[in-house]
Amino acid sequence: MSEIIYGMHAMQGILARSPERVLEVFLLKNRDDKRLNSLVHEIESLGLVIKLVDKKWLDEQTSQGVHQGIMARIKEGRSYHENDLPDLLLSKSDPLILILDGVTDPHNLGACIRTADAAGVDLIIVPKDKSAPLNATAKKVACGAAESVPLIRVTNLARTLRMLKEEHHIWLVGTAGEADHSLYQSNLTGKLAIIMGAEGEGMRRLTKELCDELVSIPMSGFVSSLNVSVATGICLFEVVRQKAK
Image 1 (cartoon, rainbow, N blue to C red):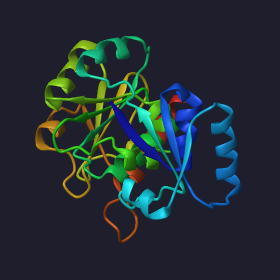
Image 2: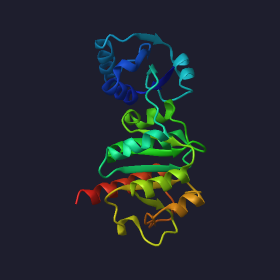
Image 3: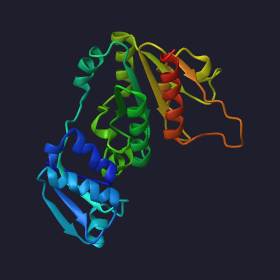
Image 4: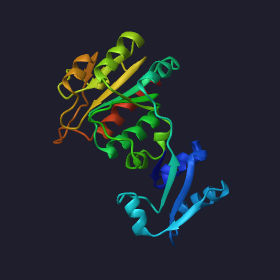
């Protein structure tokens, strides 16, 4: 089985981590770009096949995505499953987990993965239903981070949350506008999972009930909520700040 990726960052990510997965590369004809040329030299040095294509074909293959003149067909990467969770958790002394409950936009998923990688998140958990696919769009936005942060889809998120709490003693911190204190007033160290809900709706009721703690992001302006990827960045880097003390 194979899949496609597109965009310079996604290509750089796969070449840096798993160049053996690249089957063929498609390059826009007559594209003259210094960054792209440098990437092409790297691809050629690896002996990979490059096919020149026109813009119309590339646009169609990427569903009008911002491909930056390059696309590749690659072998599917490793898929993580619920059964992998115990081993992944036991390999970390103080795991940091990002849980996305109801994020359905691939752009937002990709942005959250990119932020998670930058913040040192060990793994991401999403429910199988009502969750964005990890497709070429998400991977393009993730800028290569999709190859480094394990993403696990679980059948029953509530059951997984109970397992994290009861078997692995992970503190579950959910984000909610109605919380009685902000994330800056919370202790975000140790074994931790940050749970982000969908824009507008937030976390589902049962997810919220299973949280050990609810925190909010202080809002001073007219806008009452933030894009989920922005909110994720704020929360994760507060964790980074506290753990660095």
